[in-house]
Image (cartoon, rainbow, N blue to C red):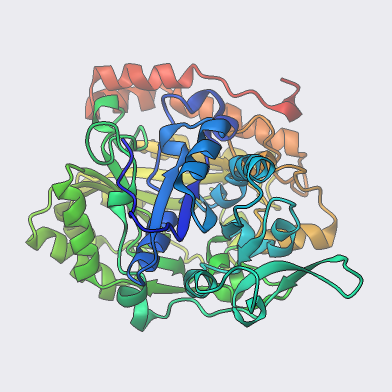
Length: 517
């Protein structure tokens, strides 16, 4: 079912592209999550309160073919088509370019009359590269809220030089094409968050028989039970991060400098919505039948000035939600874990990253505090909460022994879920700049930045090749999820059926180009 569109002329159609098959291979159909398009929802709501006509086309949720998507855009007949290429995972802005580029190219070939705009983390990182594509007419240079509002006030042809925060195409005096980046526009400041980004346009999302039933939670978030995965929603309560880890690009959408050497570390910082606004949004979701919610903040468990009133707001409203949130391993405050659990956060994702302290300190600019990882995990689990431990293999200082340290730590901790990533120099991250300066080989395609794709091509380390890193990561994942101790944990905590579901998932083997598959 499609949500109702405004009867008047549609000013902007936000498109969430589908890159799932290329990004997740055999995991896409059943096991990969289908997340609500957070930034499309935020941008749509911000435009709607300014009285622009808006709609969302979620190709990922509806699994639309290229032609079906083109036909839907044609039918909507918007003044502007905005591809929102941004996801909750750090690499999603780049891997989402797989589907976005294919659809935008097809749309331009069939209907060149539609102006096409791109926004998202990859676009923020490499705006001139994205604008240089023949199927892109405009780019928004950071999160794009104010730039988009002002662009929609134009006819898309005149006075474009007056719109801060956009890139567009022109011609020089000799009629040669010219790419222009205007001076940047500022991001929404803290004091304007509730006013200029006032929540989510949930009602614009497609559904089959009830709201949000086309979206599904991560397999483990639903305790490895497929029946608990939908309806589902993801939400930010804050934006950004105060840290500047080499491997992360999350803050690139905050950039207010068009310099070519700018990366995410130059625009770190956090902004928050009020606890009332987020409480209202969560209550809306609850009334729509949603129980499973991801809190997508990079650093939810960081500033108690913001998370404490929000968690109390959730408790006071009597919301019964199954939620998960993120924390660095060194920002967990044991005295607040009970509050988290009472508010319905039953999974805490911990960024452990590496088992070797020297390796971890090197890529985190020394900002990681020395903590006892084992004690932190034990404290979380003592409250009844589950732990998702996140690990990265292939940091620049990694060798076979340090990566084995990371795997050994994962097996020892034996947490209810473990994510294992190969290290990528993601566009917008400090590591991407370092890689370019040092002449390190970077992926030649968007799919090369996808952790689980056939074309995945992580960075080499000072001691290992890309292929060796990826091979170790894939074998480590299989080792963990076939480990009898882990399977026994799943059975005891969640049930025998759930254990069999995990075993079925582990039988899906990823194919990798650089490993000769």
